[in-house]
Image 1 (cartoon, rainbow, N blue to C red):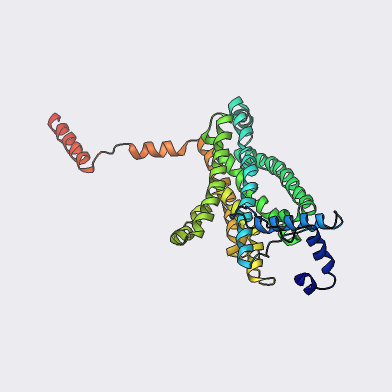
Image 2 (cartoon, one colour):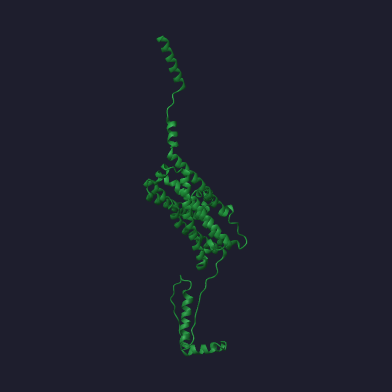
Length: 343
């Protein structure tokens, strides 16, 4: 009663009700899992809610809620980095199939004899491959536009997921440029690869595996090695080797786009670098542009070599034995002597 009288006036009726219900002299034993952070508070809230409901005949109830503390900037950056890796990986999986599909019609034309028929009919190698690349570019443009449309729609449905790739006009343009240059490199790469396969199915499976491993595998390896102190320097030196693969360049570009949220969480707004800087998207985009030109020239070189094999002829000439000059002079002298004796 002394404790009840010491309470504020608005709490005294509740204390009297609890004493009248006989709960003031009741001990409560609670068994809970100590590994769960919210187990004890939730159990106590449930017990007091039951006592209050008994004291007020169900007229009043207690409710408890728990909210997590806000993330620190470092925690937000770490979470954004993990999301960035998975976002870039999820983009690489479908585009590994897209980049490999262009080899199938080329191998079918070779298998059916359609390609040889076109060359016999007077089509030149440059005209054949330029027309093939233009058709592949039109098909890839349709895939590119559909991908950008999905990202724009996802921006309104799940803004947290699509913000990294379509959050603004600048970011959407960088995404379109990354995907476009990947197609610029993947199409001639498929053309050059078609000379090393005879079956459409084997060529398709090999290129899918190549793009998947060089993109998916290298992006994960790059992420893991960059976070380990003992391998970070070696991983930085391997970046030029990684960028020889078009799929890795695409994954690296998308990883950079997704990591901008983590950078923004650490350094704040207004300290972001230009997207086309060399340590941002500049290096992978420049590598994709160079690879497209190199693979295109390699395709034409392989085609001309197939029509008139230059390498086997050069190798045969290098392997042809040459008579020593001294031996030639001796044979000439012996021939002169035999002629004189005959005379």
